[in-house]
Image (tube, helix red, strand yellow):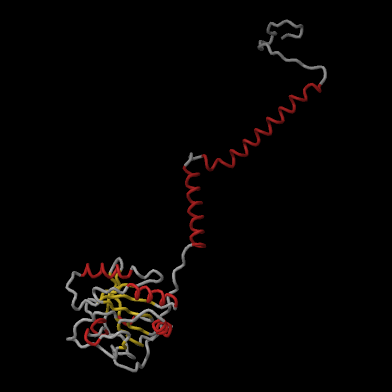
Length: 267
């Protein structure tokens, strides 16, 4: 609008603009307040964009990865703090320099042979590395779940080890079937761990398991069983001290105070 009030464009060719200049500047207070409010909002949006620019540059990929990392980190911390802790494994001391008996007898070493640990793979280890702890030699059809549970719990209590193997001298079943029965028997170790052994040469059974005719409950073996004897129909527990010396051999041991004391003596 021209200064004379004519609505036509002025001589400068500018479009008409409806501008009203108030007589009192205080009438512009609302506009000033609105302007400052819009400026604050603009600056706030700018700050937010600067902070989120590294995450929005590649879309939603970075926020998803960051969230997954945070969840994994939190889960790891919770598992470390509240997760189950493995039972402490006792260190293996040196073998006794001068055992009081021959190999395979009470007071002597375990036989100089190897057995296999049954797991995902078969791992061959020397028999004399089985210490300190208890070795249970079970007959093929052993109904000794209560004994396995007791030995596993007591060895766990005194920080010892518990090994379980089967007497296969008269067992005509396939090796896979024998291992299946052994795993099933080891399932009774609810309050401890039973480490499964595969003794393909029947060294343990041939050395410590008694013949059927002479087997008696809680009897103590004094040496190796005769090679021609019939396989035992009762379980045999071999107690091995930390120095590798066999401290006792029990035929058909029964859960109770006497068994607990023998296990405790190994610790």
